[in-house]
Amino acid sequence: MPNKSTSVLIVDDERDFVEMLSLILEDGGIAVGGASDGKECLEILATEDFDVVILDVWMPGLSGIETLKEIKKCYPLVEVIMLTGHGTAQDAVRAMKTGAFDYLLKPTDFDDLSNKLKAAGIRKKKQEERIENAKNQSISKGLPKENEQRPILQKDDRVGAETPDKSAVASKVHTEILIVDDEKEFVEMIGLRLEAAGHNVSSAYDGKECLDILSRKNIDVVFLDLEMPGMNGIETLRKIKEKYPLVEVIILTAFATIETAALGMKLGAYDYLLKPPDFVELKSKLKSAGRRKEKQEQRIQDAMDYGHRPLFI
Image: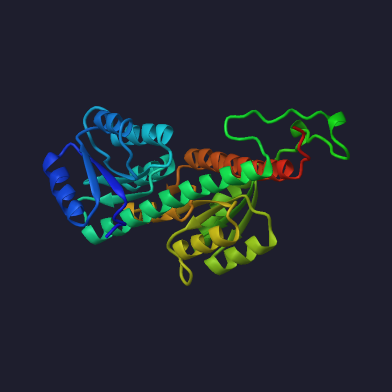
């Protein structure tokens, strides 16, 4: 059962389903609320605090995805588990990219739901703790508090420190790509097209070789097949995100399911592509993934720069 302090809002236009699930969760000591559509869900969240929202994808009026966007925009710490009776892997990927914690198919296995609720509640509390710790550290170190403007430092105001010139930070001309797939002809075909588009491409034919290349090369984006002999795509993805968290991973598969799509996104994949991929779509996702990696690297650099700056109050 989820932690008894976890509060859950169930949003589904099937009232019988909401009532049934509410009774089951309440029997386990969970505080439960119900809503029949996205509009009512947002109205409730505006007046009541919930840790987790169980949200149906297909609803009249405001759809599940639209409701999810509004929840993450207005209440970013609220975790959302998407629920559907006829979803697709593409739906799952879109929901996870929009900020959903996880995805479930109807009819729902209650043990699976219970485990996901517990994990979602734990993550929300950890995020709240991190924010509180960050605030406390900022106060103790004399850093600007939330909503306070950081002082603008001029070169002459600081001894022995140069203001970073972000315009001088060289952006990468090429994206470093690694294609991981045991189908050599497929790897060669995609590799040639990407090289013709101006990218630098490396190839690997299994998970072990992929990790070996990542240990030696600075790769931006990995195209990773799920079905491979030896170390499969999911295992490889786990190890990539453990050792090289900034490397973006786009999953390739000919057999996408909601379960594998949701798991891949939870483990840190950037996106999903069905084989054979449409090359225009592939290039679009590659461009977005490369940009996200650059932004993440810039945020880390900014944080490091700021952490080493002298304070002027």
